[in-house]
Length: 199
Picture 1 (cartoon, rainbow, N blue to C red):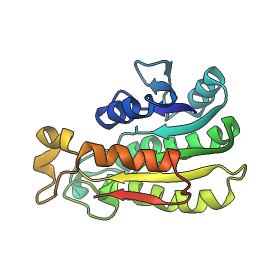
Picture 2 (cartoon, one colour):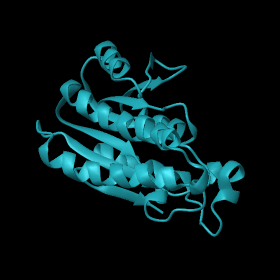
Picture 3 (cartoon, rainbow, N blue to C red):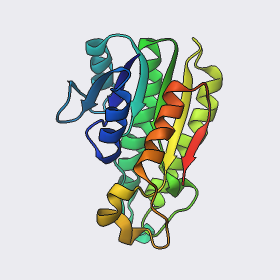
Picture 4 (cartoon, rainbow, N blue to C red):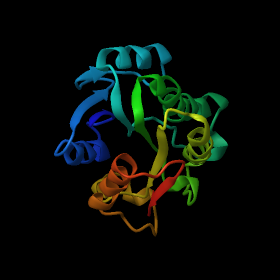
């Protein structure tokens, strides 16, 4: 398969890309470096990316920003950071990308544990993750062309414990191989409209 991985240089993305590249042709996209550049907050940038890559068999997105701050400090604009980037960025990847995905292909988006088990300062992330979880269930029913749509929802991953572990008190870190397998299940499996929780 020809697989486009947005965010393939990140903590999770690197491991997912390394695993998928063992059996498939992978194209790495990100804002600053990769085989192709993209800003997922910009629909025109997304379209230009797909025009460069041509048709693909699968799209995997492991990208998107959200604002971390106490709820009482969040402004309306702070919420829009996550809505525009992680949420609408992935919605637009799906909306635009469906025209560039071969029949029977797949789209794998990324949400996260904060939709179900939020911690302090994650109201914005919880909002976005929960919205995306619902989005994939609905979009999968209507997207057509036998395209599958799923979300992979990881918990705090082992490789991020040193950086973010103090923000997730009492959470059990998830092994990276389990997270990678969640994406493999979405890409290589037959599921559609599912939130693949790796907690």
